[in-house]
Image (tube, rainbow, N blue to C red):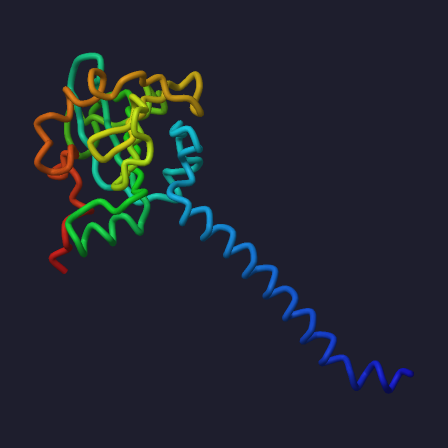
Length: 196
């Protein structure tokens, strides 16, 4: 009996490895199916949510600094790494691409780099989330149109957008960027092909 187990130990180990690999592939297949189903951040009704841990899982596209006014502070913009790669190839945002703009308050002080140096603080004001929709999936939904889903998410409820009508609440600010798919791409150097 001991001899039988010892001789067949590699078979048992191989079978365990095969079962473990199959479980991993099944999990990966589920994740791919979710992504193939359009967007992980949009439900069946077209409600857009803020991606979890986007600062760690997404690529930073660039930042804006607004010196004064209600929107003052740093505006950091993120997208999926695969979206940035697709944009490098085609110059267009692919279906399902997600853009997250996080608005943070700023502070300034004197540092070794100079006087009145601004930096972002931990005070988050709000988030804007846009999801590219090339197929017009949510016709009649007032937060979807012109190729995008549009969401403003306040800090009190990071899972719920307060946008009611993108035409009146979002498009006016994006109108100057109409020719670049409503996105101010000049502020996102990550979307440019690197020189080296």
